[in-house]
Amino acid sequence: MDKKSLSALQDFQADKFTKRIAFQKGESVVFVLNFMPGQELPSHRHPGTDVYLLGLTGSGTITVDGAKTAFAEGDILHLEGNEEFGFINDGSEPASLYVILTKIPEPRYAENI
Image (cartoon, rainbow, N blue to C red; front, side):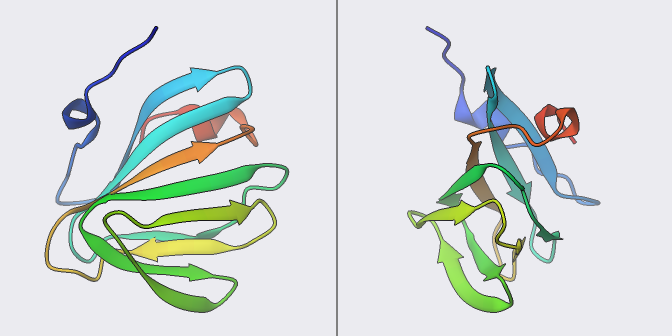
């Protein structure tokens, strides 16, 4: 068993969004993305993997292949690796997303930023 504290993964910084790795097992990685209001995850893809997102706290807008939709605490989303997506915390509170990648596209995806 490997247990982590969510509070240890929710690291908010004023100058940039953060990614904190929770688990890396085999080809999968689990991490938490943390955004202060106004911070943004640029649009990108994860070829060859499935992406699962869970809204932990806060809210924002997720863009998938150009279509924007609200994404908030308790929302769950599945994306295929060829779908281009991004997120912006356009709310007034910090936001955290729990992310699962079923296959690490390349080693840098399993690093804290």
